[in-house]
Length: 341
Image (cartoon, rainbow, N blue to C red; front, side, top):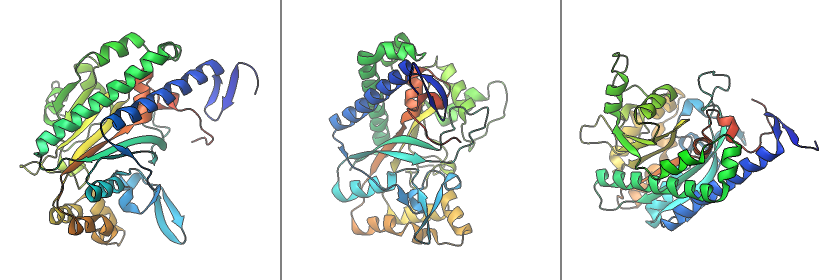
């Protein structure tokens, strides 16, 4: 329609705010790309149609599609495809791709977790010869640099747009001038259990819990490390106790977990065993399939190439935009939508 407002599947919006959102998104994504290229990554494109192995985040939230009479899935993550490039070419790669995950749009407590399609920025690189603990430190340091670089780019060009959209440019300036916080998963449980004993080792952190941790640190972005192996993807590198993994989630106000990363296991035999005993392995077995066969192409990499420690992370772009706008609703971060939930 003409005039000062536009109608979309998400409702009616001011054209001025719509333009401001497009400006913020464009500069933020450019800033992320720029920081990754400066860090030595090469950008690649990856496949959206994958088998269940490519839907590696949560198979229960995967979107199946018909692929010439066979079941395929819309990708949740390009991680395995990126790993193949890293293992074969021994350098870092990243992709900016759409990710698909079935989420409950009508959940009143999860306004930040209700996009079934979102933009995912995923870098992956080798850490040859490095101790996994040191590799995790490098992943954390890089995420911090990348996020701060992109945020500064937005502030330099679009502080007025941030304010128009309800954000606070001064808060963002103070945030990127401050060190991000860091805490272990086990210590988050101690914080959450200060007034109760509700949380146990092995419980996942939802958006409520993440917001409590952020509040504890004064709403400064916070890295949470070393989650239980039982709730994470099978190829994350186990710590010596075998109970925890070398991983990290970056919690950001106000939508919680915005980036998740980990060091990957480089031993093929160990990977195969972890796959069979994992949640996704059991899911595939319950469907009457052999998880080792489903992940056959991925596992073959470790027979063809020398062991290589590697790691990476994925930034949920819309959640990051939510941080820039200080928005509690993920729908306020997307530029356009043609399908109603």
